[in-house]
Amino acid sequence: MGGVVQEKLVFIIGAPRSGSTLLNRMIGAHTRIHAPSEPHLLTPLAHLGYYERVDAAAYDPIISQLGVRELVEQLPGGEGDYLAALRAYSDALYAQLLAATPADRLVDKTPAYALVLDFVAKLYPEARYLVLTRHPMAVWSSVVDSFFDGDHELAHRHNPIIERYVPAIARFLRERPVPLQHIRYEELVAEPERHMRAACDFLGVDFEAGMVDYGEAAPQQASARGLGDPMTVASETRPTTESLARWAGQVQGRPQRLAQCHQILSNLDDRDLEVWGTSRREIQQELAGIDPAGSPARGAGWSRHVLERRLLMTARRRVGDNWLGRGVRALREFCDLLLR
Image 1: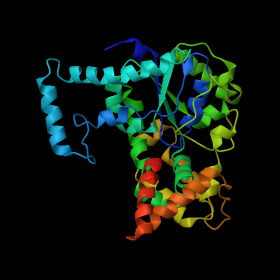
Image 2: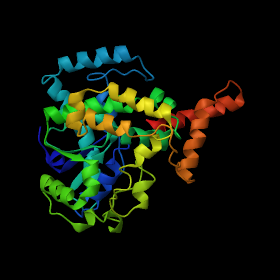
Image 3: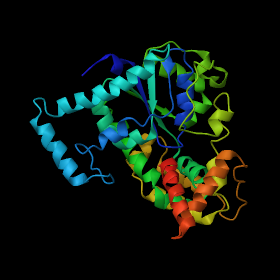
């Protein structure tokens, strides 16, 4: 079950908009650690039919699931042989990514892994896991504004992300099936050096100051740009606490959005919130302090990313049957890819 790749592999686990791109950049600024953009390598492997159903594919998901389960039953080592075969595939790709760099540690930061954690832990039980959590309402507010141009109702219909990620990651933190270290975003940006030193101890490497001042790292040390936060992290050179209270300002003066926050909170379990790092009582007090009649915070300024998102949201809302509608539907397919 062990292997050279497992010993060198680091997973960053966190919900979208939880600060995982920041953590990836900080970790990747280390001279011995390579942190490429999100590979999304393991999620499809989890949905081949043995562990998860294939609900949307160009083949019959029921037959595929039955077929792969029968195949695994016929293997001499059963599930162990199946995992070994999948691991051989991902090992080969991870090893090539690492071989192309002078580093001897590889980071895979893919937020969707949080929804298939049982599978990832079975596949790589000896890897190291950095589990990042952030205030649930801060995550949600960032999702709404970054990906849905402030349309909180459309965002929740498309993906109730808090109700999906909080229970999954909280259970992982409680059960601790693999070597893991829990990092809270609020503490990371307030005391970045302390948390980077602790992360280095966990990963078995020496601390380097460039991990805090990640924007000053040499090009070969910095994380590769790609999927992830295209705005804040790229514009900063080190962690900042400026974003901590931003979510409350984005909810102020928007009574419907405030009501949605209360509804989302009611869908979460107290135990999950406690292990996540923010109690129900704390969130309720914060929500109670928000003035629904106050002046809303200003939205994001114009940028290529903001313009792209607004065009995509317009496309999602206006799909017709004419030639324009067909073009918009094609754009929506691209939109759906970006918003997952």
